[in-house]
Length: 278
Ligand SMILES: [Fe+2]
Image (tube, rainbow, N blue to C red):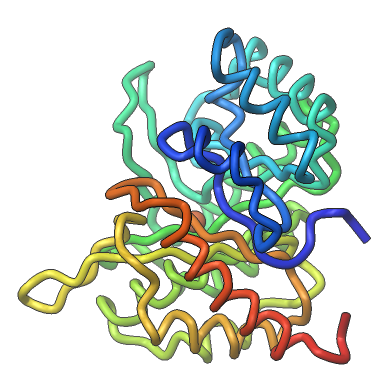
């Protein structure tokens, strides 16, 4: 079993100083975005070094989205391979979507339609990334999306299962993304999660999202987690067992002590839901 267990939070520079001074015991591990540390000096590697003295680390990429049309740049995968080795990450994840075309970054996670052609592309890129980084436990994350594509040939969860099988890879299951999509697009999030094979899941994400005045939900990572997502996490952990849970907070930052209140609530759910399975 890896050292990455229980409830962790994302190491973000906006809260790094406070977090690294306090080193709260409630936080069991940290997630980092490799892009924040590759080819960077100054406070970034310093913070990472301090974090590694206290916590095990798992990596979650932002720019190797597996739906990109062109192969990944060798410079990127070489640096990523080195970083994964340096921090001893037990797996590496990125997103099931694309975010750049012809060298232009959208700074957003854009899903491809759920087609056979897209499944083949994702599969090709995941295998390519696994070969280039040497990371056996390469995972994709299910993303939030806000409209069904008329070109889709299957539903999202069926599509995810196809890619998991074809690429023989792992999954980072974002429970908040499942919930946001379920509410916006009208499906049962529990039935969605029921279909994911537990042995493929290496990690879980939870986060807060914004509810617009018209009820539409936007995946912001800038709000507190809502009660329904806590409940869905409980359901998920009972079904798939003790997988590490990561609280994502990427905007609208709050003091670490307030974030720890959410970590404690997540830990209570984790302990209760996985009792006897750990
Ligand atoms: Fe996520």
